[in-house]
Length: 235
Image (cartoon, rainbow, N blue to C red; front, top):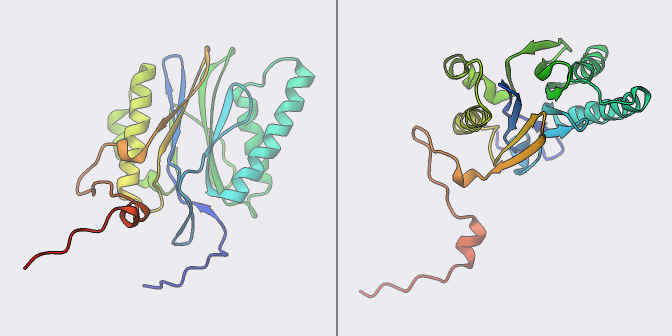
């Protein structure tokens, strides 16, 4: 194994991102690990970015690329809202991301999931994978951890879920991906969007369910070093 870590490598969000529709809105979820090769650059990053008051985007792939696309789209949507005098719809936000991703597909390395709620179509989820295709789906998963979750979602997702059922599904799915995918980890963040507004929730890594052969959380090295030394053994 090559243990030479290039700390100057691009920051990548080998990650797990999820968007799920439910009866009344959407739930977005993501882990929080950002990596640079084998090095964890940020263990508590926020991969769910606000575009407007009612639309958010989950980011995966190159951290720089996904942040740049999000910043551009947020600016365009702000201008769009001023011109129309009303909030942008989820479809408009997703189409702007699709346009930027497709027109720059040779330079961008990012996959995104757009989710939100508007008064015309309710809760909507759109997936925009590498290349800039726009796909409306009842649920979308992305990032390196998604390959572990397709069968799980085929079995667990159902039409007409409640808000609590949808959020529990998202948290469970992200924790399953964290258990198997070395590029996913940290905490689980969720965003619930519906007609009443937006709710952010946070699930610490040591509170997540442990799965098959997953190790118990350990104290950090700092905790170990600061603890008193054990008494010498008497022989």
